[in-house]
Image (cartoon, rainbow over all chains, first blue to last red; front, side, top):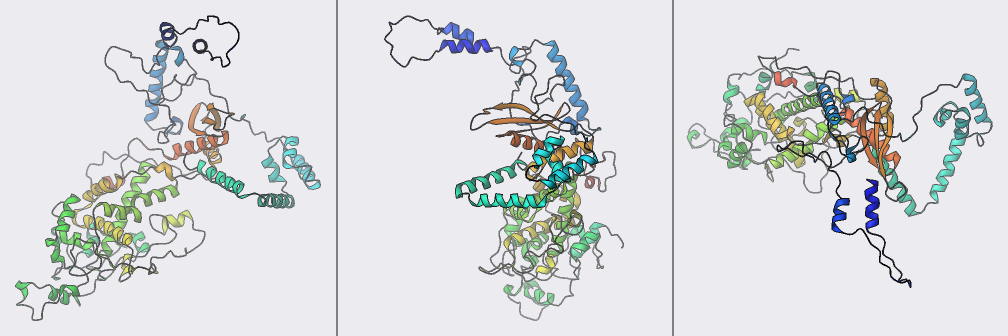
Length: 221
Length: 409
């Protein structure tokens, strides 16, 4: 793949903008028809490749978001017979994939590897997580919680929720839960309200639209 | 309370035999008897006091006289009253109405369904206050039937739906707006003013005059309690989970109503009349053809506020590994319009996938998609309980999947 792209780039170099004063020298490009045809001769995707000479159907739907009416196999109840069917289909796909020579663009790990109507193969590696997954540690003792409360009460401006969470290795939500500071929260809220009042019309509208769009996330997924 | 079969329970809907105005339905003729009515379910009683005693023939004499044709003039001494004095068209005019014939064949109803019954479903109580001639009682029956068939279908097809979504879906399928749309799609037209001289094929109701307010019975009432619980919605109000029970159709006599109210009463009354005259198998088929065939994307009815938290609670409850958001692909991270595609994984299984212009958006959307995938689970084979009604061979019955309920955070 990468070699092909490089060669194509080489085939059409940038035109020189400025007429240079240097004498013209002949430079040869890979622009002949034969070379281009050779470069663009990519192997076909497996879903387009006919397996036998008999007439077959080519099923290659465009990529789209999965249908929510298609229940993932993990969500199927134990007694549902679709579980057995899916397992059989997956086994068959496995066997076929091992027995057949696949084209390099449909190598394992590429989107063309699995058909969109099949569950992903368990051997395929999972994509990277968006956030680092974490385990809940439950490591804070009663004395730690007392300490958090004391610090927060003593100087809420220095010991904010973020600082306390970093110090004790817990979440900000937990700090807010055990050491609530109502006065500080009210003050901060008042400041925010004051700064919101200074917003102009455009900014306010933009923020409101953003809120409205956010409410749609859970509605039209 | 003594239980009575549902077919007999509806026999109140046919006027007793000595009445000249009401032609007999062959189906119900065998079951024809004057008996006191016992509501067959607590909910009916809780929702509407559905039993209205039909008053004895006081003004029926008048209607008899009004429509005594040339054959019966020798029997009646008085002059025939003008048709305009009747509140709604005479049942005998139904056979002559081309609109009714057209409507019956448009809905593919068998010819044994009497046109008189079809004409009666088109008379709203606001037009004719007499419960023997308006569709109030039929619409109560039809409302219960519609609610029953709809709810059982939804609960069996999507056993994991949260209660709020079920209410919203029921309202979308058989709510007032949907029923009014169905009526207009059937080509129902309304009369400007109800009266005896009007064609029986027109929807008869008393309109609200321009500029007038909505009548007090139809106005939004304050709920009986401000913190209305889901249990209250399930147990005591209507099938849409409204805060208050809707007004009984019998309470709308002589009150002007909006056309939507009259149209939905007609559709419900038609279901009730079909049940009375043709029996429940045909009603079930009619319901499948005209209501279940309407497409509703239930996945658009969800509104999650904290999908990520709900999903991790769900995984903890079901014993799955806690969900982890993973970046499947991305483009233009440093540009003005980046796109991130994030999948939510539990262990090695992908639960949902979402795309967004920020990592947070994609993560939240993926969690919402995973929750929808959980809630929109559909069992492979579904047999609704009503399909086994009166069936001799119950070997095709499969017990339905029952879920332990929605995620409560």
